[in-house]
Image (cartoon, rainbow, N blue to C red; front, top):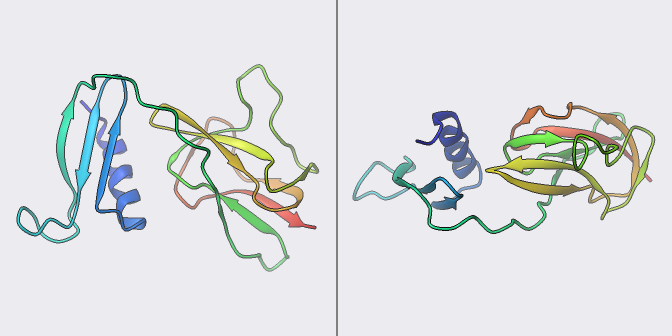
Length: 154
């Protein structure tokens, strides 16, 4: 059975991104969510249609694009998480982090991974600059839109 916390996170993601339908599969479960179906429920209320064993493993996801927030008062740009998941600063526990404070990054520089639904998504800087601060620790759960790094643009 699916974890209710994961289900609530998926519903929140649907509402925040104005999604009407979401279908996810992994080795153990299939989840289909729909909202805004007036003939079965009130508008904007999500409904779980199925939770059953999936026939095949889920395909790998494309790299996720982080949300870049506006500059802060001190001129720094925040890289935000594009999804709910678990933040990882390195590709595996034995590796060095992708980046550290003081490193220069470009738009295509991978700065971290966010694991969501057993899929590891590469998060790229999307801006050119210098890492000023990492705001989360490896292994920490992150929310959609949560600030991960602060970058001084160049």
